[in-house]
Length: 193
Image (tube, rainbow, N blue to C red; front, side, top):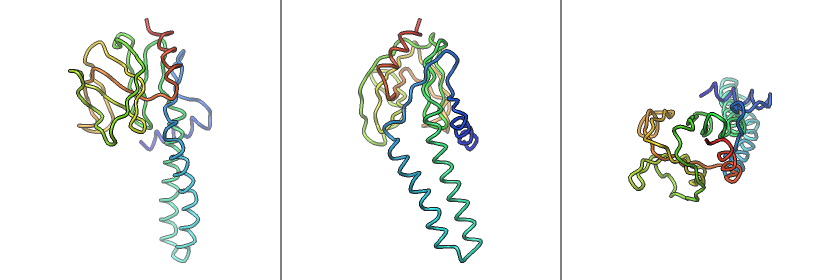
């Protein structure tokens, strides 16, 4: 994960988002952007304040400085990941991303349909649920999804982490959030055979 933080920061500096050739990128960070910027600002403010408090003790000062800079770098990397690792709709299929780790590619042959939905789930709902006999993976943003991707068959997905949230899992439906579902669906219409 550390490498993805630095990769995202490097991509942001170079202004090179991770978008497949011929594809279109779609952001999914708008619901959390304000919160993340506030956390980044507070972390940046916290570093000099804590330095003033512990400046008499060199060892504590160095430790607090390292932890503060690392935390700030991590949050900036997460913000950059949201910008530089968008969902992608392209000639080969759909790439679904979520922050630093989740990166799923679905070939057009695996996809039955893509539709707009509006669903708000209760906080802390599980990623995987059963709905009308289908296993559903929901990659929510602030407990919401607005795109539903129905798969042709149960498909094995490799998610970061360990079961029950991660590892190799099967799904029949994937629900995601995108900031602009209208343009997302237009791109699907252009590329889906």
